[in-house]
Image (cartoon, rainbow, N blue to C red):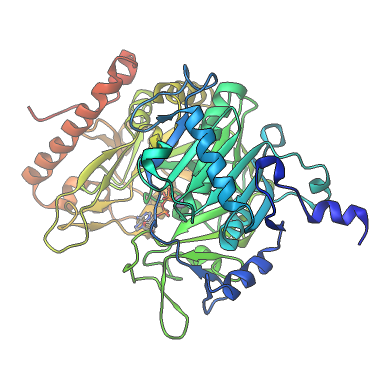
Length: 538
Ligand code: ATP
Ligand code: MN
């Protein structure tokens, strides 16, 4: 083996305090897949993908996400329940414990990066206790070329030790698991949880601070794709509202399914190199691109298998949040590199379980700003029979848990960019129709796709007064017709067959909007306040 080869095939971790570890550096996804199976940490499903269980946690744990309060963050971060401060000296002690824990162990190390636009590239070194977590990092982050690795200088380090349990009394955590960002040391420290989403959302949260503060670039919790004419569309929305599903469209090139930046050079770029799709009730018929991406190299999380090693996508006995991660090139139609020009259309996705928001409507700039700050979706009560009351859920910028700065900062940047780029903004209800959760049903994916296609093909311009109707409660412009969608589906009130019940529910929701907006009112001008619903119950 030449010296040159040795250099890129190994790496030292002693500068991080990890000593005598058996280091597996930059293994291929195939090697990691095989090692995971050999160690009994995963199984291969019939399509060739690896299936793993993430353990105690099958979702993120927002209450255990901390940011070290230091000279960089103290005056800039919007501290509170979302951005919970952590003391620097406590961090140092906990960090030392975690690296001690990893010392003498076998670890998996990967050099990779975030941000597809080279001007924003952030080099990462991910150090994992488990092989499949390292394969997740391969799938989700951008993959440097071999040549690139020789000169690779990691800037941020992710240390991921799911088997390390914190002692809250001693360590200053809330419980045994934690995900902590330290901007001075440039470390994301994750312990006590094997949920892989903490790794990707840790770096996302770091970028949501770094890009606006140091690079005057807007980070966004959205998916993006681009049409044949080079027209970019982006889709904001909270978890489960359809970012991944709707951006994965055979007729448009996928830029990314979850995290993007919007630069002052009129570009948007993906932070990631892969997708992380929900697989609950997945079918090939409805979502063929995602279904076919579940092959060797993909990692399924917390799914249940049938005896023939086929995945039972309907089985939610481990969690509703079953997932698959795969590198973006597992999708056939992708944009390479993952960069697009200024968006022409922006969709705000909401899964309205009250069933009152129109399935598609156009927003004015004021309404767009208002809805962005509100970040509405709904949570449906557990799946137990009889529990039918949906809960409104508001998350500023459609991603508050990942936004270290005050939401108004991101909203200001977005408003400015939307106006400059003359984008059209649409509110899309991918949630309930014909009544609330428990009475109505989720709107059919084929209709949502038809509405989005109509917008993207220019068939839903709403230029003439006769083309639309202003919703009496929400004030948004609701189209009267849309190719491929029955007229009756476009009006939520009509799908209910009970005007009284409809308006009662609509007012219940607008009251929740008003209550939520109170905490942002003082930061917002009259223009934005005017973008809210027009009518409330008193
Ligand atoms: P996350 O931020 O957690 O990744 P996401 O916004 O990417 O969430 P998706 O993974 O796209 O959400 O999940 C949307 C889910 O809703 C999918 O399981 C999809 O099959 C289902 N669904 C059902 N009806 C619709 C619809 N009309 N539009 C979009 N998705 C729908
Ligand atoms: Mn997604």
